[in-house]
Image 1 (cartoon, rainbow, N blue to C red):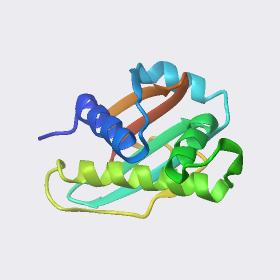
Image 2: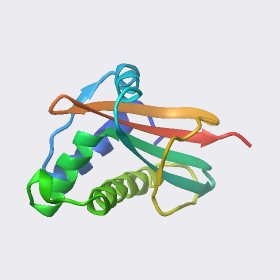
Image 3: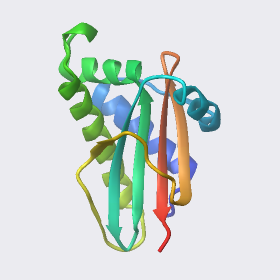
Image 4: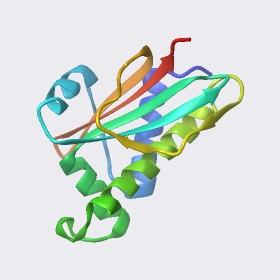
Length: 147
């Protein structure tokens, strides 16, 4: 099975639903990327190496990150530190990458998730999915690295 926007979207929605109890609504990712460019965001990258070389990039608004962490820790929005918020998003991105790894050809290894300021798209876009959570944007991209 190859990775398509549909497969990626299904994986992301399933993880957010089962792990956090949050239902994501699919949206056009190009519109969401424009919105994300104008607000405070958190971007997590998980790199693939081996048969597939590239990265999973998960980017969301600050509000999405707070909602996710609040659900994960069963707490109110104001009771969380930035470390807890980043840890939840990193774990969700790592789960997504792990699920993708099972449908990519050959054997690949995953890096630990990293919070990044901005990921340069130096590769080819394999698949992209966009979502809203209570009107707030979230995008997930799979990028193949050029060799």
